[in-house]
Image (cartoon, rainbow, N blue to C red; front, side):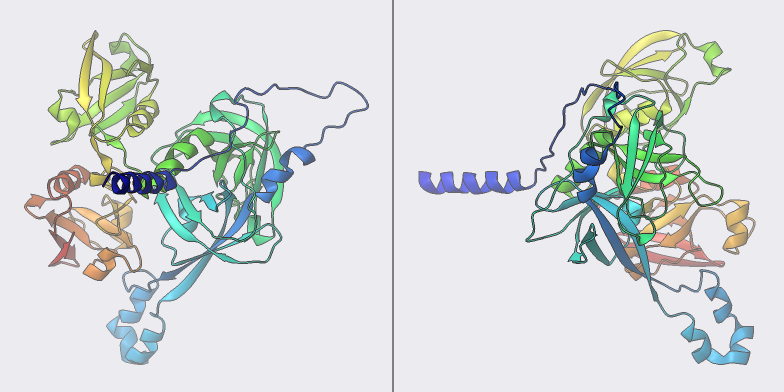
Length: 473
C-alpha cells in the first residue's frame, strides 16, 4: 500500500513539474562598456548570433466568414441585386475564404516552447513554423494566449536540437542602451535591425489593456510582430509588438513588451493555458494639473467610478479615492494601478493605501476574478464564446445601419467557428438583455457575467428592429 502511495505521489509530482517552464537567465546586472582602443571595432555579430538562431517564422491560417453583415457582402443579399443576378451568383461571393498571416516567434525552451504575439495566431486553425533558413515546416500547437497583453505561446516537436534564447532583465534597462530587433519581416528570412532604447514604461499607446512598453527606434516592420528585442549581449529584453506610423512603414517608433511581463504571462499560459488576473471593479484615471489641486499627493491612481457587485464596492472604495500604494509599493498613475492589480490572482488579499478627503487610510480588499468579466471593460475584447463588443457611436450607427435611438452594446465581430458563431450571433447585433439584466453599458454586462458565470445564459439581441434570443454558456 505504501509503495502504491509513493508511486502515485511521484506520478503527481511529475505531472505538476511538466507544467512548469524554465528559462535560461543571463546576468541581471551586466557591465556597460564602449570600445577604448583604435584597434577595436564595435561589432555585435558574436553576441547576437545565438539569438538569431532562436527566431522562427510563423504562418497562421484561419477561415474568414463572408458574413452578410460585413461589407461588401451586404450588397449581395440586397433584393435589388438578386433581382438582376440571382441567388446563385450572389452566393458565390459569400463563401468563406482562407486568410493567411505571417509573424515571428522566439524559441524559449529546448523542448519547443515559442513565444509570439496573440494577434499573430489569433483565431488560427493551422499554425506552421520554420526556423531560420531551414525549410523544414513544423506544425505548432497553441498552448495559450492572452489578448490583454497580446502574448501567446505555441509549441513544436522537433527531433533536432533547438536553441532557446537567453533572457535578460527589463527592470535594469536604461534609455540609450543598444538594442537589436530580430524577426522575419515580409517573410524574407531572419533580419536584424539596430537601434537604442528610446523610452521606457510607455503606457498610453492604446494598443493593449496592459501596457508598459519599451520604445525603440530599431526598425520593426510587418512580420516582425512576435520577434525578439535583444540587448547588446543578445539577451531577450522584449517581444516586438507594434509600431506607430502614418505611412504603415517604419518611422522609428516601435514598441516591445518587456521580458519581465513576458515571463509572468508565459509561465501562466504554460501552466494553466490562460492568464487569470485579479480584479477590483473600478474606473480609473490619472491626476492632471487641475485635480492635483485637491489632493496632498501628486501621483496615484484616481477612482472615478465603482461598478456594482464588485470587490471595490464590497470593501468600501469610493469615488475620488486616490490609491498611492499597494502592499507598500508605490502607485504612480492609473497604469501602475491597473498593472499592479492584474499581477495578483483572484482571491488574493491586497492592502491599498489611499488618500480620501486629504486623509490617509488603508483598505484590505480580496480581489475578484477578471476572467469572469472579459470584454466588459474595453471595446474589442472577446467574450461570451467569441464576441467582440463596442459602445454604440455615431460611426458604428452608420457602419452597421443602426437606428439613431439604438441602445445596448454592439457586437462588432464574431470569431470564426466559435461558440458564439454557432449560437447564431452576427456582427451588427445589439445586446439588449442578458437573463434579467437590461444592457445599457459595459458595467451591465460585467454584472451579468459575474452573476451567471458558467451557466447557460439567455442573451437577447436586436437585429434590424427584430428581437432574437440566443442561449450560450
